[in-house]
Image (cartoon, rainbow, N blue to C red):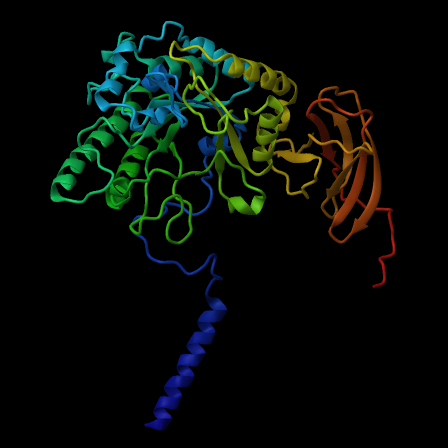
Length: 483
């Protein structure tokens, strides 16, 4: 018996050894089986998603009946974001929900918006079809709380989609799952009555999303918001099925990481740490510090001009970002494989506020000259420097040094990877301006150069570096310190 057990043990060990030699190496950590986790590992490889990651710069527009309040209620200033004013204890639900009867934006001109966005350098935009208050800027057949029952009456979403599409700007539809107007909406499901009402709300939400895709087939995707309530988080099976249905209705549809949770309630990333959706939506009013922070995923940053004001508020308050700050955020986003999306909040009458017009003009002037450093660009794989950011065009292979903090010495440090050399360095604004380069250091991690500026720039400056076609053989030899 002992001999038989020993023989079986030896055979078992041999089989384990054989499997170890022939089995493929694990590609990622051991995982928990998830029925409603991510639908895909890694980035989406299709052309539509590549188009998304090549945008670089986008625009967000927050607009709705909430703009009528201008962030004020009966003479009192609401300190938060205007689109949340209906939750303020100073505001009655009935009074707020009657505001849409005043919504008649005489100065709204979707064509003017789109042309301004085009001149600013925008490649895609996200528009609020419905925010948390539930007021729809399209004539939805599933509720009476829509633009059709306002003095304006016309379909604003259709006007926006068509105007931006005409300018060659892709449109994505913002949609809030939270709907404070719908009788079936619940934050949490505490009773059987809650659950019954919420089933009606789920049907309503699905119908509205499918309605948007049918009405506006030019849209490229959804940007979801308001998915943090426990009631929605607990609908893993329903939301997974709905996402699949939406994708079938609109092949190539792009959806961010906010839409749904897995069966354990995890949002953005499932319980195995894998991204849910096509890109990460976690970077709201903040930016990653390094490429490691984005974990190889596609992502976008949505940014307000003041600290936390989305829809129109008469009192921005606090720090208001300058065009240079916003251009730097854009450059940083692209250098870390992301898109940067700047928010505008039109006035109740539909015109943009003067501060936004000024920013659009200033950013547009810079983008007109330097867009090559933003469009079709991504992470360059080079060491980050204190003077600014580096992007790389994924089609031409050119590198762009976007300088915000020029060294007092006038010598811009650039460290390339082993074997990389420089073919040409020149100014993007003045293409005939070439720069002297000096090879100053080499080690097993690469070669370091100084690019000598001709003068101290007064605005964010872009230098183009074309890498050499052949492997670089450095002539610099320094003896390392003996320590």
